[in-house]
Image (cartoon, rainbow, N blue to C red; front, side, top):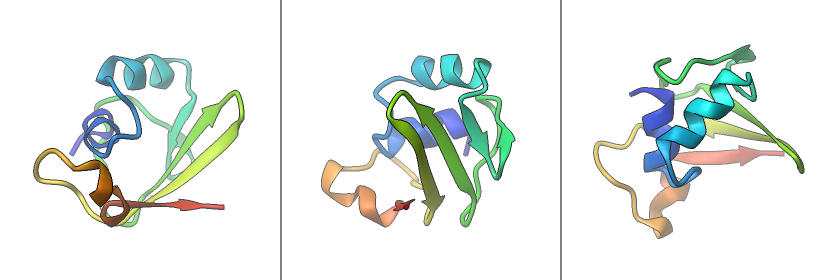
Length: 81
């Protein structure tokens, strides 16, 4: 699954366009490297999102097959402190 789709479906972002803009500014990294919106995400990958409040680190636990309910997001990723 593409990283922009993953971040949208797991409700980390509201719109894929937001992910695309952040990727273009190199604010999203996949496994330590700047990511394009089309980059594939696999189970076990680490995603870093640079925000004004700091860097949010996420470990991919599962790839969703459809839309994810808000109360089920913890099945698909975990935040790394």
